[in-house]
Length: 139
Length: 139
DNA sequence: CATATTTCGTTTGTGTACAAATAGACTGTG
DNA sequence: CACAGTCTATTTGTACACAAACGAAATATG
Image (cartoon, rainbow over all chains, first blue to last red; front, side, top):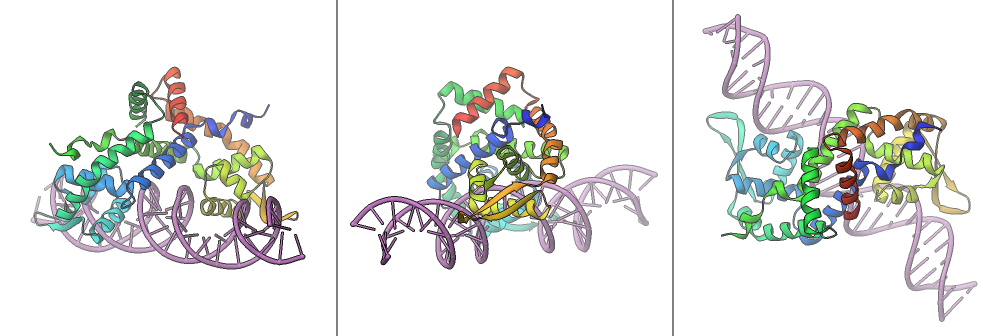
């Protein structure tokens, strides 16, 4: 028997997680067509912090430097976030949500929570907690 | 209290899954730098089937038409897959792995299984089964 | 204090991922 | 048989995601 006969694509975590993420993104974009999950994550974290450098925001939202730059650029283009170089450290680009950004965040935060609910809807409450717990241990 | 105060990014399934997928991809590319998880998935499924149309392969690997085209194009460019229009249905592009593609698949299938093992390593055997079971129900 | 190292941001290039539009080929129904 | 609807593949445009390389600024270390 060939080794490769053991390999069943549908049973690999990577494949299953990719599909689960696809479904989640579909739910998100149905409930919040105005922005992507990534953009919302960055805006949410920035609203929570009040302000942060671009790099810092990237680390806290698990986006690498190139990715966070693109996301921030799009948020800035929509006037949801402002950016200004920091006087005390001219390498850093300090970001803050605009009034419009904060308003949008408050408007959609309940919807974003609903996205999580709908994503987890096939599971009962205990299973939902268990899934989150297991996923967190994979990180 | 503001509704948005309930929203904690780190507790949303979407965010946690994105991070888990990131870790998985990092493990994959460390163990199999020669191709991406997506390319391997397409190649694996095609080897399993023997042959399939591009559309069919896309459906079975959960890639939309534009995505599967890009993936197949890159596999063809590396001579891992051949493509030819089907005589009996000229809309369809029939794909098959080349000898080189099959060899590569057999070579890396054990590595790909190892990727799954390492990804799930933080969990014990029972937890691993539970996680897979829960994720599958989210799809 | 001089410079090696680190940090931050940017740019470029490649690879998913999906929406929407298009063209060509097939199928079903009248 | 005609032709409306469906299916397949392609193209275009936008948005993550990461690697690698770069310059500028800050820090550490000798």
